[in-house]
Figure 1 (cartoon, rainbow, N blue to C red):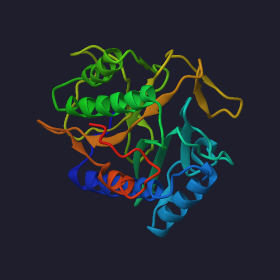
Figure 2 (cartoon, one colour):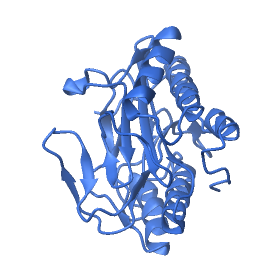
Figure 3 (cartoon, rainbow, N blue to C red):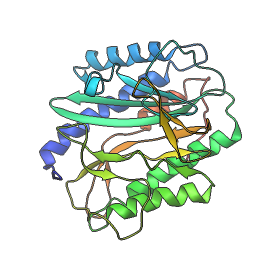
Length: 267
């Protein structure tokens, strides 16, 4: 069942999403070669709790941490560890927050230092596919229009789509209906109506589309070891133009203060 949110409920989800965005901005200040993903996780958990939120992922279906830290060929659900980030890594940081009973969710792929051109192009294409997908998320369109927007960017740049993983509705629960695929045909699928809140999250691979899950039951990697990028916003479907409830503005302001991160615009 799809839950249509009231404006009051959307305001509460927006508050959760803004805390997610501010948490990712805090992380952006610290990402550099040598820092471990465990350290980033501790920074995020402290920041969320200091701002009266709860880490949305911690304990969810048994997940052990606050962040998902997915490096290079890890697509999603990378468990923080003692891994030290290296120059040239691309690092997808996915974060969820529970605040006042409502979830927010967002992800950003950071480029550390001298990232190869292929990975830079991958990140840019994934970022732009998210923007186009959000443009398509308006009342009267269908879920297929969102997926088609992502798929178009992937194919334009000779990248592939991870079809085994999808975006989702979000609200009182971290994962709600509908599933939001990153491929599809225009005019097909569930019709979008005002008040549907979605986490749209394209995941594009540099090589083959296939993925494998590690023995830990969480870490999803590309089947061929090639890189993957992941960006995500929580949005609400409106009439005429979708509204982003999360924002990358805080993150990108923080990136400007961190000389270890790739500085150019992804748009």
